[in-house]
Length: 393
Image 1 (cartoon, rainbow, N blue to C red):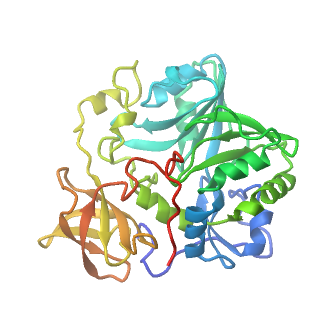
Image 2: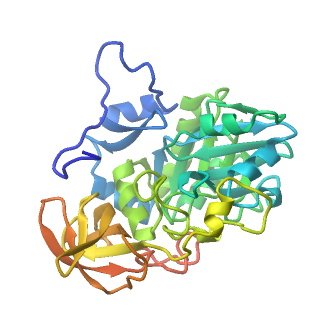
Image 3: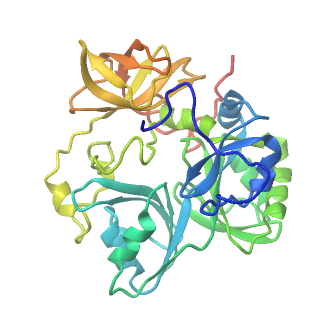
């Protein structure tokens, strides 16, 4: 069984005792989350809170949509440092890394030689010869090490933890928390160094929600408790609170943001899942380039709307025939219906096509395919151009 049966799932909780958690790492804000009763998934061998006994997932969703929410993620920043850092990363990623300026970020996709996707994440250029790659769940470290043989580059895990601050009030919180106010410039995919209560840290204008937001990077030398208390005090007038991955999961499906390992994997190319715009075929040789040059360019990924929650792995059917599978599913409090993402067996299926969708109760429901994102197709929310807040019933 690839995942849960739709009725139960297996998560991690904190209990008394010691042993058999040797390979797992707690987030720097673990003790902050602990009183809330967190239940964790394992992501990059790090614990990331999916939900809390003391927090409702629906409340978390509306916190994200109407105020400002903080998710302490399991993303794993790796550091690439040395004269050949750029050369290696340009070989590993489908995007032209030589064009990435210091103080900027880029979305980085890595592929296998056959064009299948390995991992995605956010690449930060912190100096001419130094990069951080905040990767999604996957085995990128060993892959990078294997391809770095003969190059003058050091690849390390600097023990950095990423937290997301997302929602319509997120920039107000940043302005209040930063000792020197809002960094300028701080446009989309920018990186900046700011001080929170005297502690300097890296922030980026990125996120996983398509809401207005930013992320901050907690390093080993930071006093994590003082950092959180400072951010909490600055954010309290704007409604800041911690939320879990389950709430973010709803929003990321609405936004058409993909999850490594479920929406794409080694069997899909960037083109299969609508990420072809992040492949720079004109650049110098990169892993998977030849295969991608000859790969079909049409996407097979599309959204789903139906009356119940689609079950990951369940069939998408037309006229009794399986034509695809569900890769993500949730109930949307905003759209008031089941939403999901589907990977079709073939390209060419259009929005509004009637389908039957396998849902978490084991039944098939009538639904339709839909263009992603499911709304805000121009990205006005994430760029701060849409200030009208959605209403909760």
